Image 1 (cartoon, rainbow, N blue to C red):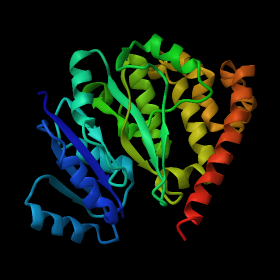
Image 2 (image 1 turned 30 degrees about the vertical axis):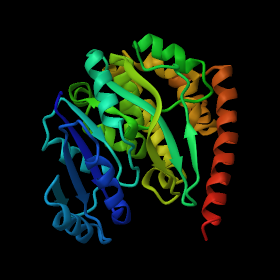
Image 3 (image 1 turned 45 degrees about the horizontal axis):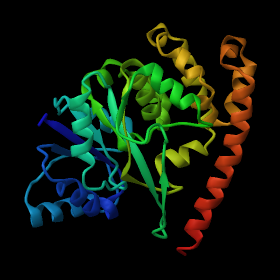
Image 4 (image 1 turned 90 degrees about the vertical axis):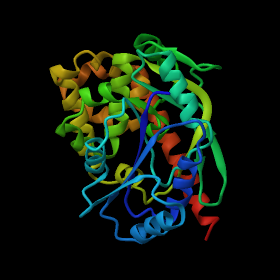
Length: 309
């Protein structure tokens, strides 16, 4: 089997580490290398990891960074220590299910052109309630060329890939990695996954192999409700004007891609004529729908949290 790495950046998720490590290390039929990098945690992550090592022996590489510099810096640090041709990047708060690695790796072996493989996910609320998130791209595992992938997501009101459900091919990922992606902050992985998909095509598995834990205090959800979100939108549109992304820019004009950001990004596009080629009646319609969807989702999240108090 092709060697692969499992990268797990951690910041103050000590309470979830045992569950996450057990889920990864219990996967059968794999020869993967697990690398856990701690991004300057201030909770009990270090003592929990040491206790885990004492009980089970050293089954993974453990890197400790001196201070918190963000998930992108942590990813850069851990990528610098690995060379495996395939890798997964999994949050310690998002446990995986059995079969996730083997099925993803099998697909990547069958379709060597694919830049990544992703699957459906399961949202996990603090109450223990779960909800399936299904992409409906196919009723069976498949490879989609960039144009076939674009046609599929153009049929949807909004679309994004949960990157912790991905198996990445290392080289296509590294080919687009540069310091400017740091400015995309909590959306950098969303952007990278789509660029890789539009350049190399994707494998898709219509089965939920990974949990996404819903936490309003998480880096991504907290960021999306901060004032800095507008700055991220500006960075995104500026990046797409760069000649380095000229090949994928037309795909980002698919309304279901930018619509996930709601009417705020539509207003930004309207204010700057240079971006008007992204505008369409369908984008505006889907953006309004996305705002309604996000509002309802936030209400559901708040209800789920209140039910645990």
